Image 1 (cartoon, helix red, strand yellow):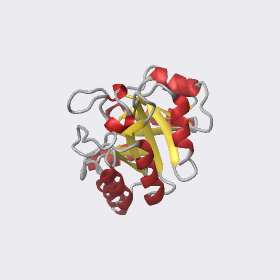
Image 2: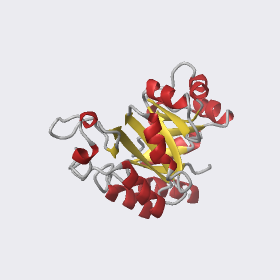
Image 3: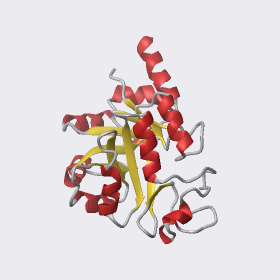
Image 4: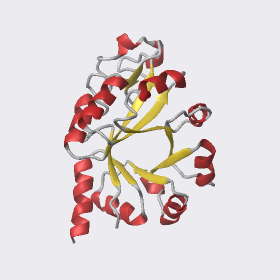
Length: 232
């Protein structure tokens, strides 16, 4: 059984507020192979790391300038970092690691590419989204950026969908993963990631199914579950 790469979901979110610099630092210190984080664009073209489109008081991130969002307490209870702050931390503490940049809200792909370009040599960046229009915007001119599709279900022809966007990875809800799907994706030299995996037995089962990456809230638990299985 080949061990999948372990990606910390919004950082080590089982131990620290999700999408916080603390959660990312803990994931790096805990030996995760990578990190997944969520990104929204502000009204003036900045990029911040936060899951929801609005702040605890109901203000929409897309309607506020960057200075009014960054550093405020987000819905997870921690200061909202700039995307550049998160990537700089990971470039220093997790050099060479996988970073799944999930785009939740974006108007300008050119502006986001400019931020990502700075960190491309230090990190294995992959820009992902659930939103097909956003993926289409990025696929029209990806530059040197790697793209990925996030989905709850694989759909009738996941391979065609991935190829249509030039995407490398299908990040799928773990309950929808099957051995047949894994064989199809990997047979095309593409990657299959499963989220959100927080049960050790399910982690081992997904590894047996051939998943390439496991995305979970507790990366250390996932690694230990897989190591124990190999040892036994």
